[in-house]
Amino acid sequence: MLRRCLVANRGEIAVRIIRACRELGIESVAVYSTADKDAMHVRLADRAVQIGPPAAADSYLRVDQLVSAALTTGCDSIHPGYGFLAESTELVKACAEHELVWIGPSAEAIETMGDKAVAKSTMHNAGLPLVPGSDGRLSGPEEAATVAAAAGYPVLLKAAAGGGGKGMRLVHGPDEVRAGFLAASTEAEAAFGDAGMYLEKAVINAHHIEIQVMGDGEGGGLILGERECSIQRRHQKLIEESPSPFLAAATLQTMKDAAEAALKALKYAGAGTIEFLVGEDQSFYFMEMNTRLQVEHPVTEEVAGYDLVQAQLLVAGGEGVPPWDGETRGHVIEFRINAEDPMHGFRPAPGRIVKFRPPLGPGIRIDTFVEDGATVPPFYDSMIAKLIVSAPTREAALNRAARALDEFVIEGIPTTISLLREIVDEPNFRAGRYTTTYIDQIGPTLATLGEA
Image (cartoon, rainbow, N blue to C red; front, side):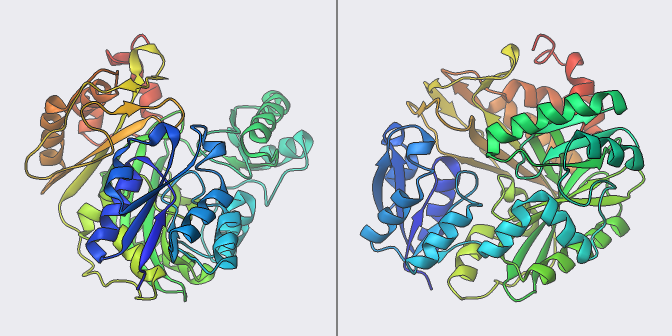
């Protein structure tokens, strides 16, 4: 069992991990930049270490500072959370060098899945279906044009080393390939330090559905069900739910079988998410694997009754994968609350929160790091809270979500609450009729987005 864990993150996920540690009797050590000196995670941890100035590159992304903080406070492990260095093989290897337990999968698994082209090849060999496209990295725009013609337009050009919508271009025809390739590769180089590109056919009217896994490191583990993540804006998720209102039971079972094959092929340890693109005909294709905890992990925790963060800690501590009864219960929807101004192009809205009054009542969970008087700094991700609602049916969950969003009060800074509240009542979303293009299609009809 682990004894003392350094939480190498900030915000709501740092709070979440610290609380999981406390419930398991594991001491926690927080790290913080000077911008976060008064943050909730700093107060909740057993100890806290300042690791640098506000810029993430000088604090939360400093492997040397994190390892030093762990060693000087007598930690035996590091939990990376999500974002920052959660998928950094450099940090994994530094942990091994200093005999610190890394709470996550092996460096090999992270490396394999981190290069999207290598990941596709690995998953293809494991039997997972792939979207037609390039076998690996493209040599240049000329090869991209050849592969695109074979796959059929429209196609997506994607950064081999990245995600989050950066280094990505939708190309509708051969006359757009060269410009799209050069623009995407330039963006990828700036974002990831790697201009490598690959290409795949664009799946029309697609759903973004992911399968949560918890691997035992020996090829086995648990397949904990799906999350529907198709409500996105600029490739960033806004709302996630489970079960998917779209997916057929037979398709879900086949996707679970594919996830099981991936676990076996990678000998994967800990929490991971296998993401699929699902067409309107229920055909599905492997997209990528996130070798870490996801922002939306509470959806699975609530619908499956399974604590993913505690399971991560137990697996890494040599306790094995905690059992699960295999049952899912009711319907769960998560809403990401961002400090952004939807009336002005979703520009970030850092500042001081004057009042923070989250909703209460049955079936409501709030994951956050803010409170009255908290300051949201301008240096990091804009998400400040997650509202997770649970109910016996999807209709009941939507009604509960409407009530909860109406009651959610945040004063002092703009947030996305009004947008989320509009979506809950939008007829297509209510009916479960939506794909990854939902926000693009419906946005102009929403008051919150009409002028954005």
